Amino acid sequence: MPDRSDGDLEQLHERLERLETKLEHKDERIQRLERKTDRLEADRDRLEADRDQLTDTVADLQQRVADLETKTSRLETTTDRLESLANAACKKATANKERIAELQSRELEKGAHLRVDSVDEHAISVADGRLERIEKDDGNAYYRLPESADPLERGGDVSLAYGDLLPIQQLARMDEDMRRSAASSLPTRLAATLWQARTDPSVGDNPWNSGCKDVAEYVTASDLKHWIRRQETGISESYAKKLVSRTIDAILELSRNRLAVRRTTQRANGLEYTERRVVLPDDAAIPGTSRQTAQEPSADTDPDPETTDVHG
Image (tube, rainbow, N blue to C red):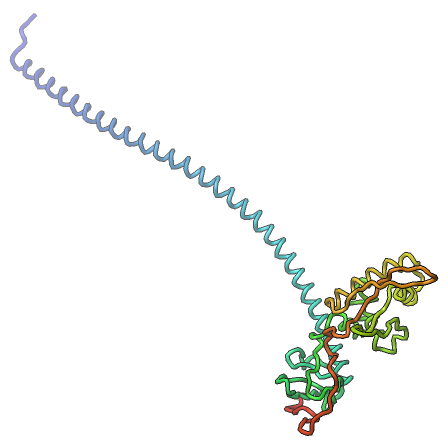
């Protein structure tokens, strides 16, 4: 074979150097690509971790939304129920206010003096629509019909407002329809009628007896049983006996235990027996009544409380 010339060797040498340089460049590019691949893989791993975290967050939010929707539904139900209760309470309060206004109007027309702070003068309906405001020597202001005397005939003493009365007195002042509306229990209505019978002749059937010593009045359980049967026709004697106990319980509760139950020993046909009595003690604190000895009015006593103004 012919010998290669020096020129061919140089060309081969240059070509080899170019190939080596190109190979180095490729190695550098491969290294860059490998580094870029490592970064991309790291980014991929981070994004996958973020995706997993976001997926968990979305699941938590969806569960929270579901819980809030359930809670909202419960709250809406509760709100509807409370609104219904509030509406019912408002209706009942309005009805009670109307009843009280009607009772106060009737009492004013009968001559009562009612404390100003217990009366809504705009709800009262009286003749001519006029109320007179007066000041009494107890330092309180009262409403009355113009020039209406105190029905308790106690001069400048306190005349009670409806709200100052015992529950038994409030019920006793109602007519039959209002009493039935205010008290659904028969023993409660019987207790109110029994209390009313003490002082109201219109009841027409008064089982109370005058007492002695420390007792103002009393009614025996046996008389009460017969009275109940006269009030409620058609009931049996056994049921009347049950009503006696329930009526006694009602009158004690409604009078706030101003009345009492005492047992007395009686004798009939040679036999002794114990009988219950509902007793009104002589010193019982009954609003609107006075157990004090009446005194002659002094010459300095003002026969009529000071009149301040008239509302019409």
